[in-house]
Image 1 (tube, protein in one colour):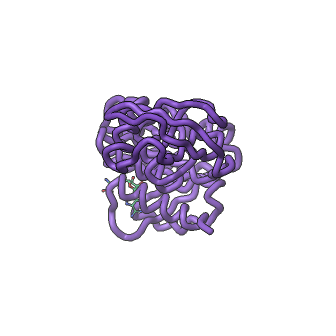
Image 2 (cartoon, helix red, strand yellow):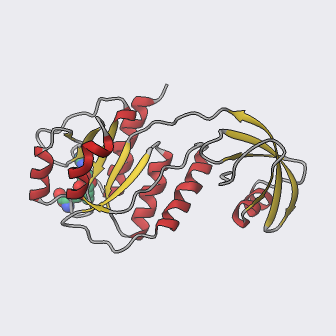
Image 3 (spheres, helix red, strand yellow):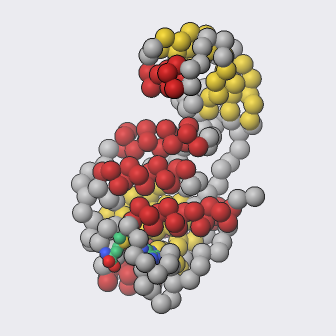
Length: 233
Ligand code: SAM
């Protein structure tokens, strides 16, 4: 379970209502049972449930069971989608090991505002579910042109694999995932001038995700899975 506070032996933590419900109703835990907590910095901790009522749960921290460690992964740059599709992208990207999420608007973006708190909550829940010890930060929305203009300064040598359907130049993405990023376009795909902009950048390589046109959410899952499995032991 994710807990934003500092984790140390003996500390008492009050979990949020959803976590209390999850422990009591879904996992059927009782006072005296164990629970595992992480905050994204201090590794994973074993805690003992002190009190558990319907929507309230307090736990006492005992010991660290997993030391803090980096979870390097590809960054995901994605064309902003409608609300449910963006929610799905955030969940999938968290499960598939994306280290950082960078939403962009493009010529053909057809979505309104994002709700950063809602997206952060989805990423946190997905991290809890898949037992990641870090929650990927979700950057404020930029335009694709802004992102490409500032890429080298922000991303160092990280290479950007742009998922582009039907591109004869597109190939496989064979590089260490901690040094890569995946770019997926919006529902309408990239506009011709954006494809030109991408083609001019030395840090961009077009990648194919197969012969069929995938929905953007599917392309995120397929592209990240490809980079993620390259990283798996
Ligand atoms: N409207 C576009 C068209 O019909 O050509 C399709 C855009 S697709 C729904 C959304 C995004 O998914 C694309 O911009 C691309 O980044 C990615 N994508 C979908 N299928 C792909 C494939 N086979 N290879 C690489 N990228 C793909």
